[in-house]
Image (cartoon, rainbow, N blue to C red):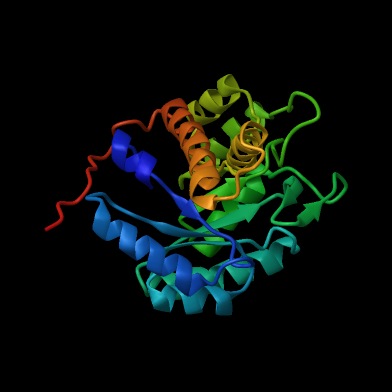
Amino acid sequence: MRRAAFTGDPGGYAGTFKHIAFEEIYALCSAYSASYRMPLALHLDHHESLDDIRRKVQAGVRSAMIDGSHLPFDDNVRLVASVVEYCHRHDCSVEAELGRLGGVEDDMATDDEQAFMTDPQEARRFVAQTGVDSLAVAIGTAHGLYTQRPKIDFQRLAAIRDVVSVPLVLHGASDVPDEFVRRAIALGVCKVNVATELKIAFAGAVKQWFADHPQGNDPRYYLRVGMDAMKEVVRNKISLCGSAGKIGAEPALTA
């Protein structure tokens, strides 16, 4: 949030509610929205139930991802359509996923045998039958870091773009070469999800701080260096995606 305000870039926030209550995250974001003159979106990432999304939308969330990618196609459609029907009545946009990424996210693992690519014609039917606002596609990326250079199916992405009019989303973008990200954006990706690189930058900076200050114990200092390292990754990703300076933002005046 601070990085976006200082650079005039759009920022996003995706949280995991296993380690902090939703109400606490929402209160923090509300406080930041009053501190900076900029649009703020709290996006729910990889939620799997309508009831969970409903509760958070009622609290004020206006962007949600319902992930039924682990379900058969027809069941995924039914789940997403039910979420879209509810969310659109409450001015909330909906992202869904078709195809399934491998890797590990939030302690949830998907092995290579469970992962599968998005079929362009299924994507066309999926968007038409659900009314979803954006679609996360599986084109060869994976959650986490790569043991070898990822093989991104750009031909598949182009085919999906040809038959789907809603914005496309690229999950698993950590550790993906910059030129691949730029090409994906050129082929219609409008939202790029990065998490692992942020965690690594944060953890690496904190580890280095303790190496330099072996007697240190004050989290006000070592957490700050982690946050600063993470912000630099965010700055670079915003620039990579061509999003720098898209919105005006400045700290709000205080009495």
